[in-house]
Length: 259
Ligand SMILES: [Mg+2]
Image (tube, rainbow, N blue to C red; front, side):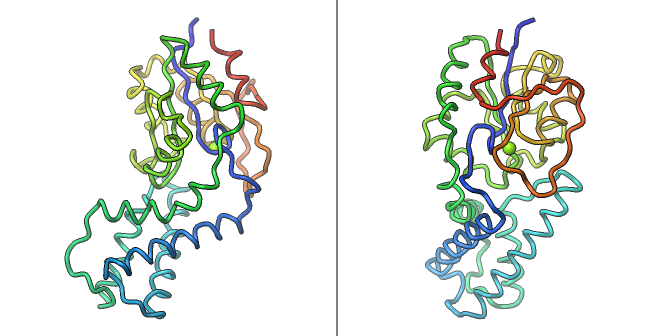
């Protein structure tokens, strides 16, 4: 039986965040949020007043964490651009926003890109990633896809583009754009379709990921799963209960499973 397609996860599968810690993530998002606020000030959307900026940060962080909790339960994704939109609307109602016109989606996306810009610099591909993708793409009939649970589509695309890797993928799917997060099965079906495959092809496809969301989602729709061992443990890791789960330590090992 021939492998028709392979889908990769992004974080800790193809790319790594060096020395990750909760503190480092927070620090990165704090830096990013200040950049976004700087842009709002430059556009004369918010006033340069300490209390308003504090209020902005406080509402943003509260919304972000409540949406994060909700996404764990419902697997719905709440894009960063939506959070910016809602925060600006709340501040507008409070009379703390100067701009009266409706904010364009384009600008909201720019704000999101700035918010994730620090993170964008931190994620680096593993040394085996490029060679592996290059080698996979030499299999003419093999389709290559990517699914990332990320709240900003452009950030994932930028990271692939900046590392000259976008060209290897037949489909790049993020939860931000699709609206649902892994392990929701629809995001897997949607990706297969974008790769030019259908639901029945799932059994002839491989999923490569580092956590339960990747493995369980793919397993449920009949895909074969390769679990990449991560160099760091996450807090509150979900145990993966899949029979005969194949574990790999380097992404280059996927080449042994393509035939
Ligand atoms: Mg991952």
